[in-house]
Structures are given as structure tokens and as C-alpha cells.
View 1: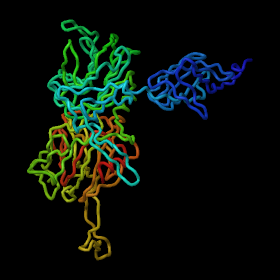
View 2 (view 1 turned 180 degrees about the vertical axis):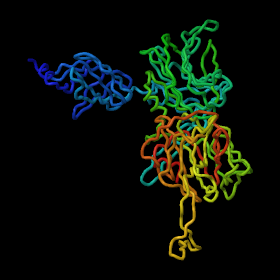
View 3 (view 1 turned 135 degrees about the vertical axis):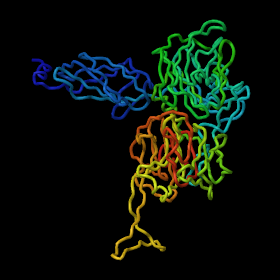
Amino acid sequence: MEAGEERTERGAAPGPPTITFDTTGPYTPCTANSCVPGGKPGQAGSFTLGPAAGDVNTAYRYKLSTDTAWSSYIPGATVKIAPVPPRSGTMTLEVEAKDANGPGAANSVDFVVKEGDGPVGRWDFHDTGDEAVDSSTTDPQLQDNATLAGGAARTGQGRRGEITVIPATDTTPAEKVADSGLALDGATGHAATAGPVVDTRASYTMAAWVRLGADSRDATVMGQDGGNRSPFLLGYEQSTKKWSFREADSDAPAGDAVSYQRVTSKSQAVPKVWTHLAGVFDSVDNTISLYVNGRLQGTTPFTTAWAAAGPLQIGRVQSAGAYTDHFPGVIDEVAVWQEALTEVQVKQESALLDADGKPSAELVASWDPAQATGMSLANSAPDYDGALSLSSGASLVDGELVLDGTSGAGSTPGPVVDDSGSFTVTAQAVVDGAAIMEKPNGYKAQILGQRTATGSSWSLWFEKTGVGQEPVLDENGEPVLDENGNFVTKPVPVGRWHFGRLTADGTGTSVVSEEEAALDSEVRLTGVHDAQERTIQLYIAADAQSNGTTTYTTQVGSGEFSVGKGYLGSWGNYLPGQIGDIRIWAGAMSDEEQVSNIVGT
């Protein structure tokens, strides 16, 4: 009797299968003392799976350490697989076999995925002069610098907010300067390289941060010249009011028919806010894909790629032999790859990490009641507009915005940030204990929020959860005792802080403060939405209120931003109390340290 037959007769499941790295593949196995990087993200491996000694396997399944589920079983005594790692770094391949007795023990191997070749062009516009330097390389022979023309200029509205030019030392703080972006007038302004940056017959990715100034017509972020037109257009289409990534099937001259394949965003584009766009052409799968704020919007076939040998255009596009669709607004952090980035890579790019590995944050709104005049608070964030108008029931007292809890509020036509993107919002709030005592249990008083058509896309709020008792104090601050020596108490409202979505039926997702809210005293509240991870977090002062992650999916709506009231089909949820130091950033601050350093406590 053979060994395999003996094991099957005993009813034993198979042992750990063998995993062989094929010599045709780009990856090699890690040993105890060495790992040699190979391949790149998105490049398939090649492995052969076989039985352990004495086994007669009938099928195998596998998963990478980045996968959330096993593959389907692949039948065969031995099989070949070609898993595709979505990111660089150490990757674990786990394999499990089965035979007539069912699944058996798993085996695993490690290998290292080499960093991709990186972008072939990157322009951050944080420089001076008529050229934007291509920072993807320091080799002048390989740089594709882009010349600013047609009135294009740099602006202090750079998406990174501040850039550290000299790191901090033990004795000196870091030296920082304001980031800059490319400001375009929508008429003639643009930037262009001297020649092509990518071969448009091969896979490529185009990405940029954009802030659309107006939506009255089509606007293009990037294209690359052919003889008559660009093969691709990444930008905005006014007819649908959506972002799109389009591919032309030929370089036809004016008058000849041209067909376009396109992918459009799931939601309408939001003007005047920062949004990250990425268009991907995959020449292996013959597809194009669009990403907005790091999230895949869709993929569609495209099989007619052709070579465009002209310059890369930033802020306009060539069409039928002429330039058109000039972009009105600001473009920043433009990057181009000669490869099809994976979804994980696009998400990493859209996170826009700084030199310390933390997300960059750009201040887009700052309303300080201490600087207010009349019944309006000007936005003091440099180069951003949007005054906060106050209603009756709102007043300015000693540098604070005081709200009566029945009609007092502030608002500005939004949106202030892209609801589908990452952002951080903060305010100092005081809840009037006596006034909230008169509200019913379950009353939700909104601090800040940005609305949809029926509720909030996101908001900070206080919820009254009930009534408790606290000792009555005398003029010296000592507890008052009754004739029996017991503490004299009085009823007081209790409740907690929230950051999330406030809905009319009381449902929705939020992070809740770990302790009861302190009333009649100023509290620093900070909410963070991470679009890349689809999570939210609440900070009291700079203390995170959740140890885990709270999954969150935004709802994009009309975007009116309000202070001291909430929209749940109609306006309500008025806050009785005070609000001060309202600020909003594009970008999700990542931890308590970053919140403390940038927001404060």
C-alpha cells in the first residue's frame, strides 16, 4: 500500500502543501536572514502548489496577507497560481490543500514586494520662477519641468498647508513655510512640459489635487498632446456636473468622428473644495478607471490606445487641434506614473503624507468670534472665503458667539469641505446647563455640521441622555448638608459629545465621548473623517475617544455649513450656549499628537 493510500485509509487530512517560487516569477522567498525585494505592486507572482510527502491532494486555495478572504479552491494534484500583491513591503502567501477527507493544515511563505518605480513626473509647485520643477528625479536630464504660461501663477492655497523646510532639533523648533499651488484663471492659464511624459500606449496613472473654482463649463486637469487631441482627459464635465476620466479612440483631426470611453464619479463634483482625482489606464486588462479621494468610482473597457508624443498639459487639453477646457481654480501635487496603480496605491497617494508620515492638513476655514464685526464672521483662513452669517438669537459677547438655543445660529453657503474627502473640524463649545435642563431627554444640540438634503453629512453635537443629581454648594464651594447630615442635591442634565451623522430618526453612526460632557465650561471638540480608511474619530481636547475605528460612509448633499443648529428635513437642534474658535482643515489628522500640535487643546 502506498503512503498516500495509507493516509487516506486512516481518514487523515492533508499536511501543509509545498509552495514553490517559479523561476519565471519576479519574487523570491524570504529566509531567516535575508529578503530580496522583487517585482512591484500590481505585478503578479508565479507559484506552484504541491502536496506534502505522502499526500494525494485534490485542490488548493490561497490568500495574500492583504486579502480579506480565501480564493476559491483550485482543483488539481498540483496547481499554478499568480496572485497580485497590491502594495510594496513584506507579503505573506498562505496556502491550504484538501483531499477526499477535507481541508488540511496550511503552509505560508514570505516575500518582499519592491517599491514601484515611482512617478515619472511630480510637480508640487512649491518653487519659484516660470518653471515648476519635476521633483520625481534630481537628474536634470530626466526631469520634465513644466512651464507656467497664460497668467498661471502660484498661490498660498497649496494642499499641504505648511511644509517643514528645516526639521526641529533638541533646541530649536522646526522652520515651516506655507505651501503653494498652481492658480489658473480658466481662460488661458496652464503649465506644460516640453515633451511627452508617458507613453500613452502603455499603462499609466494621472493624479492631482484640485480645487474647482466654478462649474459653468467643462474643465480639464491634465491631458497630453497628440497630433490633434489628447488621448485622455482627466477633469470635470459640466453636462453631468461630475468628475470624469475619458479616453479618445483616435487622434482624429477636426471634423472627423471620435468616440470616447469614460468613467464618471458616483457623486457630483463639489466646487471650491479640495478633491483628489486619479485616472488609470491599464494596458494589460485594457481598462480605464477613475478614483475620487482615493476611492474607485468605476472601471470600463478601453481597447484602442494610441501614442501621443506631445507635451503634458496641466490645466487645459488639446482637442481638434486647439486648446480648450481651461481649468478655473487651483491644481496641486500633480503626479504621473508609467504604470497602472492599484487601488491601495491610489489610496496611499491621496493620503498626502508629510515627511513625518502624517497626513498633510490645509486650513480652509477659520471663524473667530473675537474678530467678528456686526452680524458676520469673516473667514480668516488665508486665500479662502465664506463669511459666517449670524441669525437672530445669536450675539457676540466678550469674543464668544452666544446662542439662545431657540433660533440663534450661524451659517455659510457650503460646502466648506468635500464630504467624500478627508477633513478635520474643531470648535470650542459651552453647553448652558440650565437651558439644556429644559430640553427633553434625547435632545441633540448641534455644534457644527454640513448638511445633506435630509440630514447631516457630518456634525459635532451634544446629546442630553438624562438627569442626574449633584451636591448644592455654598458660597465657599462646600457641599450643603440638610438637618440629618445628608448632602443637599439638585437635578442636573447629563449627556455626551458625538461626532458623526445626525439623522431625523435618531439613527446614524457616531463616535461618542467616553465620559459625560462637562456643562457650563468650555470644551475643545475635534472631529476627523478619514476618507482613505472610511473612519471617523472624536477628540476631547486632544484625547481620542475611541480606541478602535468607527466605520463611516459620507453622504454628499447640498453642503450648507451651520453653527449651533442642525438640519433634519427642517432646521432645529439649536444649541443653548457658546461657540468659539471654529476651524476646518482639508486632511484627516491621524493621532493625538498631530491634533495637539495643530489644533491645540
